[in-house]
Image (cartoon, rainbow over all chains, first blue to last red; front, side):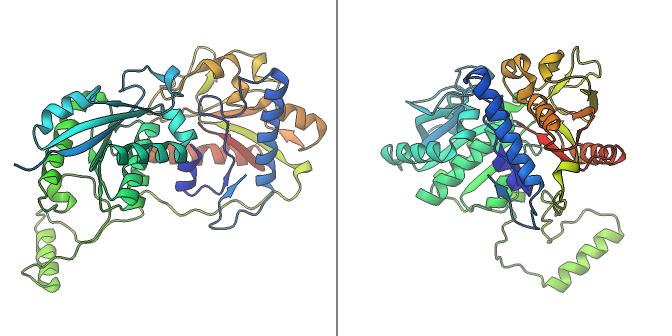
Length: 60
Length: 356
């Protein structure tokens, strides 16, 4: 529910795949699922290294 | 006398009788007539209005396809010549409440329809309602759970009858809807100075009085973003989650709703969440995926990989966990503060928090 996080003013938000499985997608093969999870975590690490400012919300 | 007002009723998959969390992914569907709470609602509104169409959507589907669903609902509302939308009530259910507020607001701004819903004051969607300040949308306070259905429907139904007959709508305090923070001009007999003195005298005498100041920002606390990590290769990172992953057997007794506690669990010897057994305790989502593979909520497998590759220096040997479902804002603020202090004491530079 990243729209909720945005509403509450969170600055660094990475949209997940779905509510019951935010970090990955069980419909994919194991390899593709892990690759997707890594991609999500990579985006989170990029966000941690970005100046989020005082009002901007990062969505990637 | 006058024609009945044509009403659209919005429900989630559960109240439409489709099923629980396992059906939270069902797409939008519409059907003529009344279903679930709509039946009782129709009985309560009597002759003033008529539910001509019911639309329902899975809570997850709505949240993941919001614009698409709203566009479809708009089309259905137009095709059925609807004049009013009733959604919910959603009680403390966040995803459902969010969908109800979004549907009401979207129909108000695109078609000028009245929107009516019900939610508990702890529903996170309340913030959305207050932010929209939509003149046409009214949310009525409900109990935390479905036990207050009859009362919620009665309140909403009598208000529909009022809207349907075109009666003037008074302030929240008179009508019983949750205040939206909208100020209306009105003429009163006493000047501001006189009213202020009256209030002061009431206050001194410990009599009840009503302030004319609207408390704002109660839900939105200003906070600033943490500075960025400048050297990730030297950073000590931690994982945290509100998805409800806890030690097997849930030894600390986490509840599926309304938690006021948190824990940290050791993962220092694990390469993946699959290397240990976990309990998923969360009343707001379908557990199967997370039970099969807790890396969906705590992405330890890929973080361990990245740690080994030197992408960052160190992954904290514990992950931080609570269950964030239907939680009170004050309790979660305290949990957040305690977690952050603990992370600081462990030398953590940055955190990835997974929520649902």
